[in-house]
Image 1 (cartoon, rainbow, N blue to C red):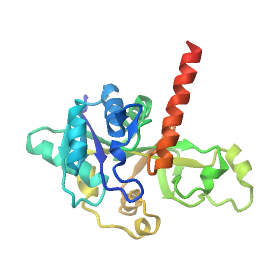
Image 2: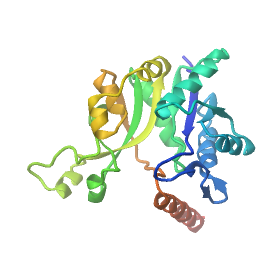
Image 3: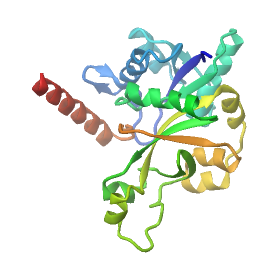
Image 4: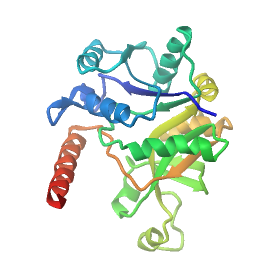
Length: 260
């Protein structure tokens, strides 16, 4: 059975660490346009929409030929912004089976990663699907900005900014070789009925401690499938992250030119 799929890209202008980051220029185009184009060019969705509460972002997306929707500035997070877009579309009699939330600060997103999210719904009786990637650097395990996921097979058990699982008897290097640690990559797919439910949930105790929204869903009994990916991405939270992305893009182009 064919499922109708919707991609929503939440983009806020007011970020405490990097205000205006969706409009930061990367190789001549705003970052939000890079993300939109990557998602649209994957041809995996029936519709792709940027969701924002800022007129500047709206105008830039529309100028570059994208589709953008203005959402409330009272929403708590990107998930609620995605859900509001879904609600607006359903009011116009447009309905979808799967919604994928791709953050507007992920300019390195790849088609293969998005395809894995959608495949997760084919392979599992999934409610929510996300991605995880094997960690092979000790500094990433120690870094609280790199969220770790502990899972049983593909079923996520817990997400944390801490070094989990805790290495009680072995050193980190040994555990890295055993492929114990996984980084969570914050791209989410939801069945539409599940999305509507989880945005009504109150902030949970573990979420308050870790500042990780997905713990709210786990604490309320929802299952999250974490598909293993070989691809990594760099979320842009700071100007330093932006420079890292620009450098990675330059490096990748250099490699491609050398191989041709």
